[in-house]
Amino acid sequence: MNSDELLKLDNQICFAFYACSREITKLYRPILAELGLTYTQYITLLALWEQDNVSVKELGAKLLLDSGTLTPLLKKLESMGLLTRARDKSDERHLIVRLTEKGQELRKQAECVPGRLYEGTDIEPEELISLRKQVQSLMNKINEAT
Amino acid sequence: MNSDELLKLDNQICFAFYACSREITKLYRPILAELGLTYTQYITLLALWEQDNVSVKELGAKLLLDSGTLTPLLKKLESMGLLTRARDKSDERHLIVRLTEKGQELRKQAECVPGRLYEGTDIEPEELISLRKQVQSLMNKINEAT
DNA sequence: ACCCAATTAATTGCATACAATTTATATAGA
DNA sequence: TCTATATAAATTGTATGCAATTAATTGGGT
Image (cartoon, rainbow over all chains, first blue to last red; front, side, top):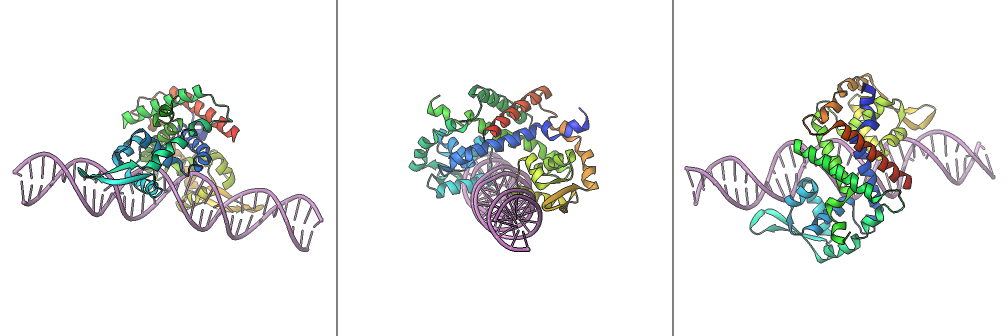
Protein backbone atom coordinates (compact mmCIF):
# COMPACT_ATOMS: atom_id res chain seq x y z
CA MET A 1 0.00 0.00 0.00
CA ASN A 2 1.43 3.39 -0.97
CA SER A 3 1.67 6.33 1.38
CA ASP A 4 -1.53 7.96 0.08
CA GLU A 5 -3.61 4.84 0.62
CA LEU A 6 -1.90 4.18 3.94
CA LEU A 7 -3.06 7.45 5.48
CA LYS A 8 -6.46 7.73 3.82
CA LEU A 9 -9.12 8.34 6.43
CA ASP A 10 -11.46 5.72 4.99
CA ASN A 11 -8.75 3.08 5.16
CA GLN A 12 -8.30 3.47 8.92
CA ILE A 13 -9.95 0.77 10.98
CA CYS A 14 -9.67 3.12 13.95
CA PHE A 15 -11.76 5.79 12.27
CA ALA A 16 -14.42 3.29 11.23
CA PHE A 17 -14.81 2.21 14.85
CA TYR A 18 -14.59 5.71 16.23
CA ALA A 19 -17.20 7.08 13.83
CA CYS A 20 -19.52 4.07 14.04
CA SER A 21 -19.40 4.03 17.81
CA ARG A 22 -20.53 7.64 17.91
CA GLU A 23 -23.25 7.03 15.32
CA ILE A 24 -24.64 4.16 17.38
CA THR A 25 -24.59 6.35 20.48
CA LYS A 26 -26.62 8.89 18.53
CA LEU A 27 -29.23 6.22 17.82
CA TYR A 28 -29.52 5.62 21.55
CA ARG A 29 -29.71 9.26 22.58
CA PRO A 30 -33.39 10.01 21.90
CA ILE A 31 -34.52 6.64 23.24
CA LEU A 32 -32.48 6.93 26.43
CA ALA A 33 -33.56 10.54 26.88
CA GLU A 34 -37.07 9.19 27.51
CA LEU A 35 -35.60 7.35 30.51
CA GLY A 36 -33.62 10.42 31.56
CA LEU A 37 -30.32 8.65 30.90
CA THR A 38 -27.17 9.32 28.91
CA TYR A 39 -25.45 6.49 27.09
CA THR A 40 -22.69 6.04 29.68
CA GLN A 41 -25.23 6.08 32.48
CA TYR A 42 -27.18 3.40 30.59
CA ILE A 43 -24.30 0.96 30.17
CA THR A 44 -23.39 1.52 33.83
CA LEU A 45 -26.90 0.48 34.77
CA LEU A 46 -26.72 -2.52 32.41
CA ALA A 47 -23.65 -3.67 34.37
CA LEU A 48 -25.43 -3.13 37.70
CA TRP A 49 -28.63 -4.87 36.62
CA GLU A 50 -26.44 -7.84 35.77
CA GLN A 51 -24.53 -7.72 39.05
CA ASP A 52 -25.43 -5.46 41.95
CA ASN A 53 -23.39 -4.68 45.08
CA VAL A 54 -20.11 -4.19 43.30
CA SER A 55 -17.15 -1.93 44.01
CA VAL A 56 -16.10 0.91 41.75
CA LYS A 57 -13.09 -1.20 40.87
CA GLU A 58 -15.20 -4.15 39.71
CA LEU A 59 -17.56 -1.90 37.82
CA GLY A 60 -14.61 -0.23 36.13
CA ALA A 61 -13.21 -3.61 35.08
CA LYS A 62 -16.50 -4.46 33.36
CA LEU A 63 -16.95 -1.11 31.65
CA LEU A 64 -13.24 -0.44 31.04
CA LEU A 65 -13.57 2.90 32.82
CA ASP A 66 -11.50 4.25 35.69
CA SER A 67 -12.53 6.11 38.83
CA GLY A 68 -11.87 9.42 37.13
CA THR A 69 -14.83 8.73 34.88
CA LEU A 70 -16.91 6.62 37.23
CA THR A 71 -16.82 8.75 40.38
CA PRO A 72 -18.70 11.74 38.91
CA LEU A 73 -20.95 9.40 36.91
CA LEU A 74 -21.96 7.40 39.99
CA LYS A 75 -22.46 10.57 42.02
CA LYS A 76 -24.85 11.75 39.32
CA LEU A 77 -26.79 8.46 39.33
CA GLU A 78 -26.88 8.66 43.14
CA SER A 79 -28.31 12.18 42.97
CA MET A 80 -30.95 10.82 40.60
CA GLY A 81 -31.92 8.31 43.29
CA LEU A 82 -30.99 5.26 41.21
CA LEU A 83 -28.20 3.92 43.43
CA THR A 84 -26.37 4.36 46.71
CA ARG A 85 -22.62 4.64 47.34
CA ALA A 86 -21.19 3.38 50.63
CA ARG A 87 -17.83 2.23 51.88
CA ASP A 88 -17.34 -1.49 52.44
CA LYS A 89 -17.33 -2.02 56.23
CA SER A 90 -14.80 -4.84 55.95
CA ASP A 91 -12.45 -2.77 53.78
CA GLU A 92 -13.01 0.94 53.77
CA ARG A 93 -10.94 1.37 50.62
CA HIS A 94 -13.76 -0.14 48.57
CA LEU A 95 -16.82 1.86 47.72
CA ILE A 96 -19.82 -0.38 47.15
CA VAL A 97 -22.49 0.60 44.66
CA ARG A 98 -26.05 -0.64 45.23
CA LEU A 99 -29.13 -0.08 43.13
CA THR A 100 -32.08 1.50 44.91
CA GLU A 101 -35.60 0.20 44.34
CA LYS A 102 -36.02 3.01 41.82
CA GLY A 103 -32.85 1.88 40.08
CA GLN A 104 -34.12 -1.68 39.90
CA GLU A 105 -37.52 -0.56 38.63
CA LEU A 106 -35.94 1.33 35.76
CA ARG A 107 -34.81 -1.98 34.32
CA LYS A 108 -38.37 -2.75 33.20
CA GLN A 109 -38.50 0.42 31.13
CA ALA A 110 -35.07 -0.32 29.70
CA GLU A 111 -36.14 -3.69 28.33
CA CYS A 112 -37.68 -2.08 25.29
CA VAL A 113 -34.52 -0.14 24.41
CA PRO A 114 -32.57 -2.82 22.47
CA GLY A 115 -35.57 -3.66 20.35
CA ARG A 116 -36.26 -0.08 19.38
CA LEU A 117 -32.73 0.74 18.33
CA TYR A 118 -32.63 -0.59 14.82
CA GLU A 119 -36.28 -0.04 14.03
CA GLY A 120 -36.60 1.48 10.59
CA THR A 121 -33.09 0.51 9.57
CA ASP A 122 -32.05 -2.07 7.03
CA ILE A 123 -29.98 -4.02 9.55
CA GLU A 124 -30.30 -7.76 10.11
CA PRO A 125 -29.96 -9.07 13.69
CA GLU A 126 -27.72 -11.89 12.44
CA GLU A 127 -25.39 -9.32 10.91
CA LEU A 128 -25.16 -7.51 14.24
CA ILE A 129 -24.43 -10.66 16.19
CA SER A 130 -21.72 -11.75 13.77
CA LEU A 131 -20.17 -8.32 13.80
CA ARG A 132 -20.30 -8.09 17.59
CA LYS A 133 -18.42 -11.38 17.92
CA GLN A 134 -15.74 -10.25 15.50
CA VAL A 135 -15.34 -6.97 17.38
CA GLN A 136 -15.11 -8.78 20.71
CA SER A 137 -12.49 -11.09 19.23
CA LEU A 138 -10.46 -8.13 18.00
CA MET A 139 -10.66 -6.51 21.41
CA ASN A 140 -9.45 -9.68 23.09
CA LYS A 141 -6.45 -9.76 20.79
CA ILE A 142 -5.66 -6.14 21.58
CA ASN A 143 -5.96 -6.76 25.31
CA GLU A 144 -3.77 -9.86 25.15
CA ALA A 145 -1.01 -7.82 23.57
CA THR A 146 -1.07 -5.00 26.12
CA MET B 1 -34.12 -13.77 23.76
CA ASN B 2 -35.23 -13.37 27.37
CA SER B 3 -34.97 -10.14 29.32
CA ASP B 4 -31.73 -11.16 31.05
CA GLU B 5 -29.96 -11.94 27.79
CA LEU B 6 -31.46 -8.87 26.15
CA LEU B 7 -29.85 -6.46 28.60
CA LYS B 8 -26.57 -8.29 29.16
CA LEU B 9 -23.66 -5.95 28.62
CA ASP B 10 -21.73 -8.46 26.51
CA ASN B 11 -24.70 -8.88 24.17
CA GLN B 12 -24.82 -5.19 23.28
CA ILE B 13 -23.32 -4.36 19.92
CA CYS B 14 -23.10 -0.77 21.10
CA PHE B 15 -20.86 -1.67 24.03
CA ALA B 16 -18.59 -3.78 21.85
CA PHE B 17 -18.05 -0.80 19.55
CA TYR B 18 -17.77 1.70 22.36
CA ALA B 19 -15.21 -0.38 24.27
CA CYS B 20 -13.24 -1.45 21.21
CA SER B 21 -13.06 2.07 19.86
CA ARG B 22 -11.54 3.26 23.12
CA GLU B 23 -9.10 0.33 23.21
CA ILE B 24 -7.89 1.12 19.72
CA THR B 25 -7.45 4.77 20.69
CA LYS B 26 -5.30 3.58 23.59
CA LEU B 27 -3.07 1.73 21.12
CA TYR B 28 -2.57 4.99 19.25
CA ARG B 29 -1.89 7.16 22.28
CA PRO B 30 1.81 6.37 22.92
CA ILE B 31 2.64 6.36 19.20
CA LEU B 32 0.89 9.67 18.53
CA ALA B 33 2.40 11.17 21.67
CA GLU B 34 5.77 10.94 19.91
CA LEU B 35 4.34 13.28 17.26
CA GLY B 36 2.80 15.50 19.92
CA LEU B 37 -0.72 14.67 18.78
CA THR B 38 -3.91 13.39 20.34
CA TYR B 39 -6.09 10.91 18.47
CA THR B 40 -8.67 13.49 17.37
CA GLN B 41 -5.93 15.83 16.23
CA TYR B 42 -4.45 12.94 14.23
CA ILE B 43 -7.60 12.06 12.32
CA THR B 44 -8.17 15.75 11.65
CA LEU B 45 -4.73 15.91 10.07
CA LEU B 46 -5.44 12.71 8.11
CA ALA B 47 -8.44 14.49 6.60
CA LEU B 48 -6.38 17.58 5.81
CA TRP B 49 -3.49 15.63 4.29
CA GLU B 50 -6.07 14.08 1.99
CA GLN B 51 -7.69 17.40 1.14
CA ASP B 52 -6.33 20.77 2.16
CA ASN B 53 -8.05 24.17 1.95
CA VAL B 54 -11.37 23.05 3.31
CA SER B 55 -13.97 24.82 5.40
CA VAL B 56 -14.84 23.78 8.94
CA LYS B 57 -18.14 22.58 7.53
CA GLU B 58 -16.49 20.27 4.99
CA LEU B 59 -14.03 18.99 7.55
CA GLY B 60 -16.89 18.31 9.93
CA ALA B 61 -18.73 16.33 7.26
CA LYS B 62 -15.72 14.07 6.79
CA LEU B 63 -15.00 13.55 10.47
CA LEU B 64 -18.64 13.62 11.61
CA LEU B 65 -17.82 16.39 14.08
CA ASP B 66 -19.50 19.76 14.52
CA SER B 67 -18.02 23.21 15.07
CA GLY B 68 -18.42 22.81 18.81
CA THR B 69 -15.74 20.14 18.73
CA LEU B 70 -13.75 21.39 15.77
CA THR B 71 -13.36 25.06 16.68
CA PRO B 72 -11.26 24.49 19.82
CA LEU B 73 -9.45 21.57 18.14
CA LEU B 74 -8.45 23.67 15.13
CA LYS B 75 -7.43 26.58 17.35
CA LYS B 76 -5.13 24.20 19.19
CA LEU B 77 -3.58 22.88 15.96
CA GLU B 78 -3.19 26.48 14.82
CA SER B 79 -1.38 27.36 18.05
CA MET B 80 0.91 24.39 17.38
CA GLY B 81 1.78 25.94 14.03
CA LEU B 82 0.34 23.08 11.97
CA LEU B 83 -2.40 25.02 10.17
CA THR B 84 -3.92 28.43 9.59
CA ARG B 85 -7.53 29.52 9.94
CA ALA B 86 -8.85 32.33 7.73
CA ARG B 87 -12.24 33.47 6.51
CA ASP B 88 -13.11 32.81 2.89
CA LYS B 89 -12.91 36.17 1.06
CA SER B 90 -15.77 35.23 -1.25
CA ASP B 91 -18.03 34.19 1.65
CA GLU B 92 -17.01 35.37 5.07
CA ARG B 93 -19.23 32.83 6.73
CA HIS B 94 -16.80 30.08 5.80
CA LEU B 95 -13.57 29.61 7.70
CA ILE B 96 -10.92 27.97 5.56
CA VAL B 97 -8.35 25.68 7.12
CA ARG B 98 -4.94 25.38 5.47
CA LEU B 99 -1.95 23.27 6.48
CA THR B 100 1.29 25.16 7.07
CA GLU B 101 4.58 23.80 5.78
CA LYS B 102 5.13 22.34 9.24
CA GLY B 103 1.72 20.66 9.06
CA GLN B 104 2.56 19.17 5.68
CA GLU B 105 5.97 17.99 6.88
CA LEU B 106 4.40 16.11 9.79
CA ARG B 107 2.81 13.77 7.28
CA LYS B 108 6.14 12.07 6.66
CA GLN B 109 6.48 11.21 10.31
CA ALA B 110 2.90 9.98 10.41
CA GLU B 111 3.45 7.45 7.65
CA CYS B 112 4.95 4.98 10.10
CA VAL B 113 1.96 5.16 12.46
CA PRO B 114 -0.42 2.66 10.79
CA GLY B 115 2.31 0.05 10.49
CA ARG B 116 3.33 0.30 14.12
CA LEU B 117 -0.16 -0.03 15.54
CA TYR B 118 -0.68 -3.75 15.53
CA GLU B 119 2.95 -4.71 16.03
CA GLY B 120 3.17 -7.44 18.61
CA THR B 121 -0.50 -8.34 18.34
CA ASP B 122 -2.03 -11.47 16.90
CA ILE B 123 -4.10 -9.54 14.37
CA GLU B 124 -4.15 -10.31 10.65
CA PRO B 125 -4.35 -7.36 8.23
CA GLU B 126 -6.98 -9.25 6.18
CA GLU B 127 -9.13 -9.55 9.29
CA LEU B 128 -8.89 -5.80 9.86
CA ILE B 129 -9.81 -4.97 6.29
CA SER B 130 -12.81 -7.29 6.31
CA LEU B 131 -13.96 -5.94 9.65
CA ARG B 132 -13.51 -2.34 8.54
CA LYS B 133 -15.71 -2.93 5.49
CA GLN B 134 -18.43 -4.49 7.60
CA VAL B 135 -18.31 -1.59 10.04
CA GLN B 136 -18.50 0.93 7.21
CA SER B 137 -21.46 -0.94 5.76
CA LEU B 138 -23.23 -0.86 9.12
CA MET B 139 -22.59 2.84 9.44
CA ASN B 140 -24.01 3.47 5.99
CA LYS B 141 -27.18 1.64 6.95
CA ILE B 142 -27.49 3.70 10.12
CA ASN B 143 -26.97 6.93 8.23
CA GLU B 144 -29.49 5.99 5.55
CA ALA B 145 -32.13 5.51 8.21
CA THR B 146 -31.57 8.83 9.97
C1' DA C 1 2.81 -1.87 68.07
C1' DC C 2 5.43 0.21 63.96
C1' DC C 3 6.81 1.01 59.29
C1' DC C 4 6.19 0.42 54.47
C1' DA C 5 4.54 -1.00 50.15
C1' DA C 6 0.25 -1.94 47.89
C1' DT C 7 -4.53 -0.97 46.90
C1' DT C 8 -8.67 1.81 46.01
C1' DA C 9 -11.21 6.15 45.30
C1' DA C 10 -11.20 10.75 44.71
C1' DT C 11 -9.32 14.82 42.70
C1' DT C 12 -7.16 17.72 39.18
C1' DG C 13 -6.31 19.16 34.65
C1' DC C 14 -6.81 18.65 29.82
C1' DA C 15 -9.16 17.21 25.62
C1' DT C 16 -12.99 15.86 23.51
C1' DA C 17 -18.37 15.33 22.01
C1' DC C 18 -22.53 17.47 21.31
C1' DA C 19 -27.06 20.02 22.00
C1' DA C 20 -28.61 24.60 22.07
C1' DT C 21 -27.92 29.31 21.43
C1' DT C 22 -25.70 33.36 19.51
C1' DT C 23 -23.25 36.09 16.08
C1' DA C 24 -21.94 37.32 11.55
C1' DT C 25 -22.71 37.02 6.82
C1' DA C 26 -25.16 36.07 2.55
C1' DT C 27 -29.14 35.68 -0.39
C1' DA C 28 -33.83 35.73 -2.03
C1' DG C 29 -37.84 38.31 -2.47
C1' DA C 30 -40.96 42.38 -1.71
C1' DT D 1 -32.96 48.99 -1.02
C1' DC D 2 -34.91 46.61 2.82
C1' DT D 3 -36.10 42.63 5.19
C1' DA D 4 -36.76 37.91 6.28
C1' DT D 5 -34.62 33.63 5.93
C1' DA D 6 -30.82 30.63 5.64
C1' DT D 7 -26.15 29.33 6.52
C1' DA D 8 -21.60 28.80 8.95
C1' DA D 9 -18.78 29.33 13.06
C1' DA D 10 -18.33 30.37 17.56
C1' DT D 11 -19.93 30.11 22.17
C1' DT D 12 -22.06 28.04 26.26
C1' DG D 13 -23.10 24.37 29.24
C1' DT D 14 -23.09 19.50 30.35
C1' DA D 15 -21.08 14.95 30.26
C1' DT D 16 -17.59 12.13 29.40
C1' DG D 17 -12.55 9.83 29.11
C1' DC D 18 -8.19 9.47 30.95
C1' DA D 19 -3.37 10.45 32.80
C1' DA D 20 -1.31 11.87 36.91
C1' DT D 21 -1.52 12.89 41.58
C1' DT D 22 -3.37 12.64 46.23
C1' DA D 23 -5.62 10.67 50.29
C1' DA D 24 -7.19 6.95 52.98
C1' DT D 25 -6.82 2.31 54.28
C1' DT D 26 -4.88 -2.24 54.60
C1' DG D 27 -1.71 -6.08 55.22
C1' DG D 28 2.99 -7.82 55.54
C1' DG D 29 7.17 -7.90 57.85
C1' DT D 30 9.88 -6.53 61.76
